[in-house]
Image 1 (tube, rainbow over the protein chains, first blue to last red):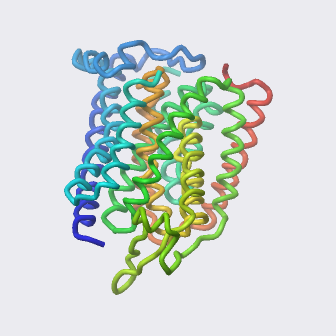
Image 2: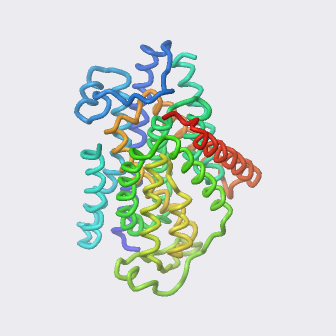
Image 3: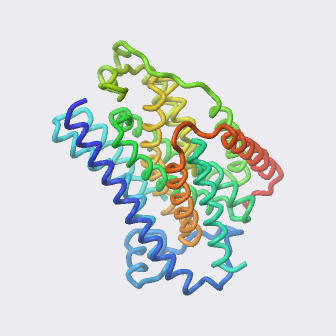
Length: 123
Length: 279
């Protein structure tokens, strides 16, 4: 195995650890706010209604979290969690490019494009 | 029961599922959806959204540790993620077309399959050059062994790629990691050493689930109030389970968990056939 591959592995390990820890911390903070305000209400997950607009799309979620709503904060944490593997793929593309490994740059960018498509355009 | 009590109970259930999943190597994700739908009466769409998010958390957390040990084959992972992510999008499209009852039955069948695969044997890698396609893609790698490294070869690339597409479909359709199918492709079809198969499968699960989660977030399946205790519970449980696990999974616990999975499989199929899943 080349040194480039080994340093890529270590950097990917760090990136994944930080992403998951930061996401969990944000979700935990959001949980505190959410349970403080809504803990005494009744849950209703028996029938499916779908989430409101402010909890579905990136810009709207950030606005909701900016207003320090508990559910918005949790959703930003979940977004960060979903973004962690995406960042891992983006980093791998950059690392393969530094190794001048064209084949794997193309493969990695294809995965990145599919991920971004699913996040931004799939309804 | 109010939201506080509901959150604590769901969190506790997710914690146990994540812990037992890590201890047995079967993954906690497969029991989260039955736990939420059969145990708490949650609509299967919310349950799948919450489960998929927790799958990303445990997979990324575990991969962070495995990648340091040098078992994960990043090239194989990246190459096959083309198949799993496209499959995940197809699964998300399929989820919108199928009724909750059909999804419930498919879920039960997938549970049955994962219980059966879990008792299947393991390969220990092959020597030699590997298939021409695997060589062109430079998929071969090195396995850390006591006192150095051992090279292993790869074959069965088209078959593995096709099965990975199926793993992606199942992952986002059912909100699971579908690690059993991924290991089947890597271990049985592509002939990788078992340790490389399991760790590389885990590495791919996060990216696959992220593709599915993107679709579900846009569609409003991911509810923060429900996903929060599921994600935190499974993550904490699987971290503790991985720490407790020193050597091989305890046999009795693994047998017990396999029985639980079989019972849940039967219940998911029953509730789907009877129209009991919420439509």
